[in-house]
Length: 90
Image: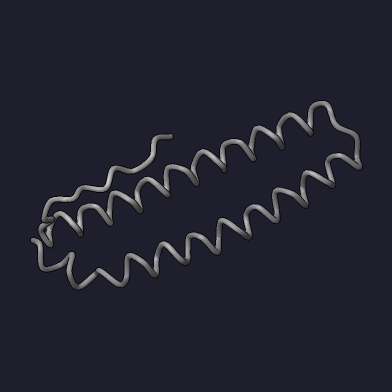
């Protein structure tokens, strides 16, 4: 993943809002990749793992899902901050 490019020119209000939405979309894509990796971990463990390994992976995935849930709430709050601005674009 590349680093974001920060422009030094004057950015319009509309471009700022679009950048925020793009940022949220990129974070959601990252979350989707994490969830996919977690599902692959579960699948591999169920096929090849012992009972103890399955329980350990279950706890690990549970903890990850709790973290993702918190991140999703933060992203929702971030979007809510700009909901009035987004409505004014259309």
